[in-house]
Length: 231
Ligand SMILES: [Fe+2]
Ligand SMILES: [Fe+2]
Image (tube, rainbow, N blue to C red; front, side, top):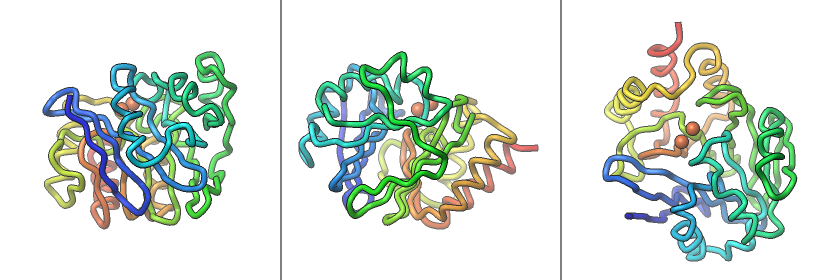
């Protein structure tokens, strides 16, 4: 299976695995005094993920483990990561609390909407985005210093060759994928999450599947998603 690690901003890395030529799963590592790993991945990728993280930091030093919602690609490996990163805290919002308390080998640390975590030089803001991209417990994260918004499945696409992809053709790839797969909540949850994302004024949208995007494409993508999927 193809895999790669590459920087997307200063001390933030995308770690991707490619179970097929046309679809990828992205995991994100924020390197700081308190390192963060976002999206735990599935069991068959665990060895690859830990090996790639080891190229940058000692995986045991990870301070925060987190993800958007309770789903296999988001958090299957949670307990494997906790076994390695013994001092790590699992960050979860109030609607995800019950599932993670049952699933996790360690009680999670609950965050409030807009709670900010000081990582050393960077700052991570937790955003509750219920039902968006999907699942009641959904949340997203924003790293304030680099302007990186971790959007989970929002913006998912099948562009597996590029790290960054911007412009109209990228937006149309996202719309096409969502129309084909239809896994994202439409209507009010999408509107509310888009508003929160816009409020952060992100420079980079770190998407869980496919290429990521940046700059003016982010706001244009949000507007296009609302036009297409909200009444
Ligand atoms: Fe998902
Ligand atoms: Fe996903």
